Each structure stands twice: as C-alpha cells, then as structure tokens.
Amino acid sequence: MATLTIRNVDDELKARLRIEAAQHGHSMEEEVREILRRALSKPPARGGLGSRLRQRFATLADPGLELPARVEPPRSPELPE
Image (tube, rainbow, N blue to C red):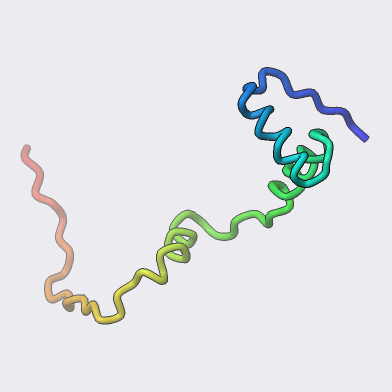
C-alpha cells in the first residue's frame, strides 16, 4: 500500500472530517480513504459537452413549444469594408 501525505489542510476542514469520521465510526484516515473511493469510483462522463448539457436539461424541454419553419436560407453577414 502507498502512503499519502496531505499538507496545508484548513483547520475547519480537518474538524469537519473528524466529525464525519466519528459519525461513521472510522478513523480520520479511513474516512479519507472512503471519500476518495467514492469520488473516484464514479464512471467517467460519456459524450461531449453538448451531449451532457442536452442530457442534463432534457427534462426542462417544453413539449408545447413549436419552432417556426425556416423559410429563408441562411445568408452570410454583410461586413463593412
């Protein structure tokens, strides 16, 4: 097993970790190991940003929303010379 040392931890964060460990009946070391296991055992996100955004907000879509049909083809912008 490897050893990991973490320096410069806020006193408040350490106190909260101590409380969480006590509530779960663990040492602080075991609590940190559990937190790391949970955080790193999640499967990686699939798809690109657009796919993830669509999936996240899919439930917010308004099924009654009708988009108007495009009657004009897209045109390039007119830029000043």
